[in-house]
Image 1 (tube, rainbow, N blue to C red):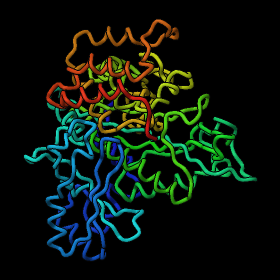
Image 2: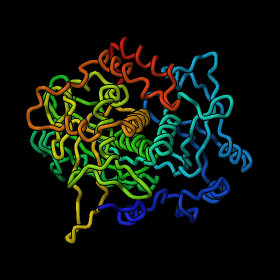
Image 3: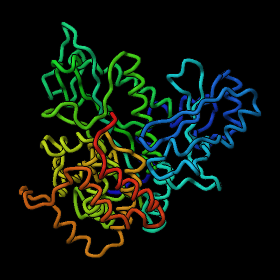
Image 4: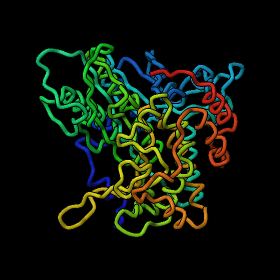
Length: 472
């Protein structure tokens, strides 16, 4: 059964509307915000600072702060942004120091009140623009927007996505701590988990920022302190709601930012590493994808025949999965997670309920009358907590667009179906050099439509071949 975007959003409205913290003050939905609205809020609420926030090559949130001297200064910042050093932000993606000037350009519909700033601060997400005013080719924000637009233009399908954000929270061991058994914390609640209150505060903060959340819970992972680490670690998950690809990428980035800030305030540690300690459950960043055609979510095939859009997703993810690891599995412990065999995929297969498959078709929750409560999705289980969500979703859109035009989709998808004996199936890469090989072999797919610049692909392949360490 298909459901429209409007019907889905109506059923899934959180307690606060998108951008609700600011929407209440402005008196309109965030999609309708104008520069005048934000100038008025700053004046009425006596907001001291404005933060232009944006995504870097390292998948982390960056900030440029302003203390506007007057409304004219504020208006200029919100309209035109500011010049910044592109080589410091995106040097690893190909911007040279001899041509490093780029511009941040605010998107006023993304504005929110910073829940962590020590003084009242208005935050606005920005895109990146080159010297000629065009969107910057090397920007992860540009890439995901171009890939999404190309996908819809060439296939008639608008991809939407949600990401599962898994995180390990760590605090010093204390006598009298009550905890769940090792790696058995799934849906555990207080007092058996210490991070429940922080996780719930994260949901409130995200709602106020306009990030739509599906649900959150305690996850399986639990690591006891040892001689090398005095912290006890437990795993939690926040699953977001389906959004267009650019918004889904921003939502993932903001969620990790919120969790990191809350953990810091508690004096705890916060890790999105794929593996904290070998032999324990790792952290994935599973991606759920839903093709939308003419405003309706397409069936995934979990309960019947698989339509063309779902077939193209499965085939595209399977054939480009190894190359997509360049964006979705960026830490050396990514390979430990995949190959130690604990609910993580290691071979290129799909299954309707197989949690060890690369691609899964999850069941759909229904009400007592059989009405679906959420759209069906295709789940990509390969990425982990080291993923760059903007680059990953851009790559997924390119893989889907390529596969959509392929012939014999049905037989090719059926040949990749898990039948319980996976030994003959192709394995995913076991190292960065293998990922580079896969990316080079598929480079035409990513560069199609002038989405991924060739110099970016070449730079990334060179970096993968020479990688010797990781930054947490």
